[in-house]
Each structure stands twice: as C-alpha cells, then as structure tokens.
Image 1 (spheres, helix red, strand yellow):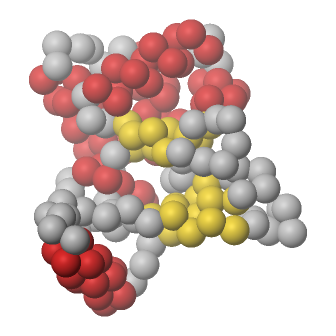
Image 2 (image 1 turned 180 degrees about the vertical axis):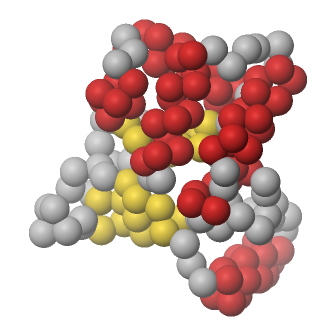
Length: 154
C-alpha cells in the first residue's frame, strides 16, 4: 500500500479495511464498528477532517471519537494534522493514501491535500536532504504545508 499509491481513489476500500485491521491486530486492538465508521469517513473525505466534521459524518459521541482516533493513531493508521484554528485535523496515514502535502487556510483552518508532480517531488526531496545534511541532520522524509487563504475565505 505504500510508495506507489498517490491517490485515494486508486486504493480499494477493502484493501484499506484489511490494512487497518492488520495494524490494529498488531497492537492488540479490534477493528470495531466505530473505528470502521471513522476510517470510512476519512477515506471518503480525501482530506484531513476536524473532530466536528468527523462527528457530523459518523454520528459518534465526541468522547468515543477521540478515544477511537487515539487507538487508530497508536496503530499508525491515522495521523493528526495541525491547522491554524483550534481543531486538530485527522487523516489516514501515508501508508494508505500515498505521499502528499497540505494546503492550510490561515483564515478558517481548512486543510486540503495537495499532490506535487513526481518530478518536482523528487527535486524537492533531494534539495531538502542536502539542506538537512549541511546542518548535520539525517532526513527520513518531509512534510510541506502551503499556508494561505482558501477560496471560501477570499
């Protein structure tokens, strides 16, 4: 599931469910209906979602959503994405979705996924690795946030 998959749409929902179940089993957890609802919601959204967005779509109680997101984070299935408002966003890990970056609205906090063409991605990765090496830092990978104003706020 990792590496070549660059788009949510190219990943089969059944493959995602199998991957999530395997990751949860590895940490002694089950793929419960509440966790399945969260994963389904994040898969369909194709962008990081805030707790209110997750609650609206899943119908879960806030405490249940936080509890289950923590388990999914611990399993390496879900990652927390910081934004510019009071809400953390959550999305499926890059093992599932493929490598991507984020566009973050500094006005409303909206976060969307953005994929860079492979050629530019490789150039960016090489440039960042050189910068890191000069600083005596061994780079494992990179993340990039493009911060600005979304079309809804303009």
